[in-house]
Length: 232
Ligand code: MN
Image (cartoon, rainbow, N blue to C red; front, side):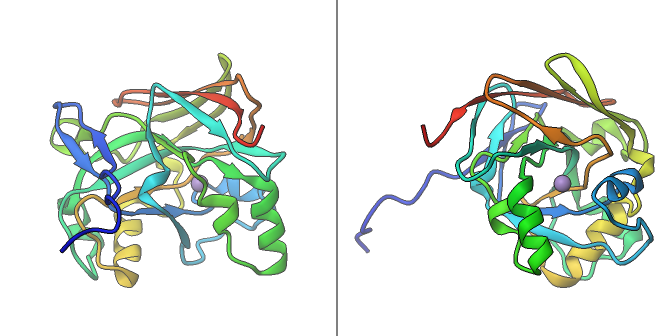
């Protein structure tokens, strides 16, 4: 059949073995570190986890420049461990979750905090606060076969060379395996899906010209520069 227009090019992340990882969907876990939940004004109990989604188009490779998006005056960084799903499944048991992981990367869940809070306070969807173009920078994906299961390890974010977030993966309220199990109750996970697993305390705003670097022990760093405002 003749196409009315060209389909978009697939979003492809890169692995440490030089392979392309076609990105399908992004699931992002909220408030998964107790200290961050507290700084967001929440009680960090083990309530069931929750998540929101982003389009694959939000992914941009680390190493480049991301736009400062329109309609915000409070664009925040959130350093996150990203889990890359390599094998699909529904209703995955936590004990089986590791077999569905292709690998791990350092990433960012950039957030229009002003819009997220306005939506939260009115009980409205978070889409405009979270599902933002170029808001999910992603470092190189390292296969789990090389790293082993990442259940602990330092995660940091530096802004213009200064440490702003400094946590440990072992501080997650819900483990990677539990998060995979939870998301797979609602959606059949597919190869190419990415799970952004939440951020430690210390989130804050960026301005054009800022340089952000996320490091996670055992993974390549994810570094991006914040470009000029997209609407000027
Ligand atoms: Mn987040």
